Length: 283
Image (tube, rainbow, N blue to C red; front, side):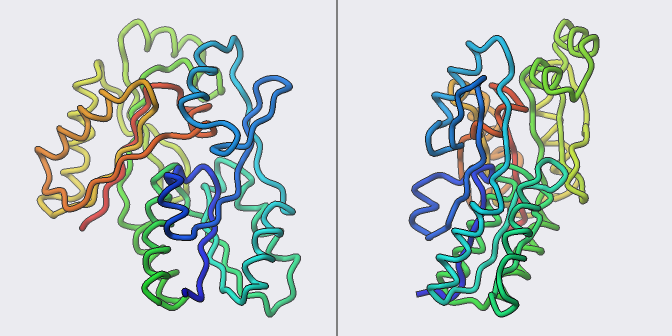
């Protein structure tokens, strides 16, 4: 049994079966539709969320876990004699990382807890947590696991292709006029996350196919002809978008490993249905 336990939050979008197989503890954020509150990826699964989202006149809201939520998980694991590595959504997007840090500060100094800001989102850090848990299962030390987390974080290339500007506008990311013009011109924003964990626009391309081709070009510029690990995150109901993106990248790259997952309710609140996340690391 591993002496190192991995903790993350629900925005990592790690499939439930994978979390359970690897023993990854997940602390959920919350999604609110008016007065109705749901635990992300526990009480509200992606397919149901997107059905509610498309029928809702207002954008749902999200909230971070409390320090107490993390404290309970950390205490259970440290009481079992585990060292804890806790990896979370970029602190630029949410107070989730800060809640985990506060929870850590509630322990005595001898509690072996390391909290890491992934400076990423969705499976962009979910795959890092999975890789860390696989190392832990093979008996790697805490220091080796933390070093691998930082290495993968440096090497990760990620892009989000947003199907519609509507949800970025509702969430205050862009103005209403820009969203209207963009929609009329069929503009597809390609988003990325920089080294500080902040969302940036990598490009804006007219049309879905051109946008996918542009993502492939951006990845080739960074990774060349090296073999890669490819992860695609999709939204239920838009599986064709993910299928097309994966097919294009498999043509352009030597893909050693392919994983597909779903974008959960919290990330989906801000990105909207039809979003495709592309995450690539050198193999």
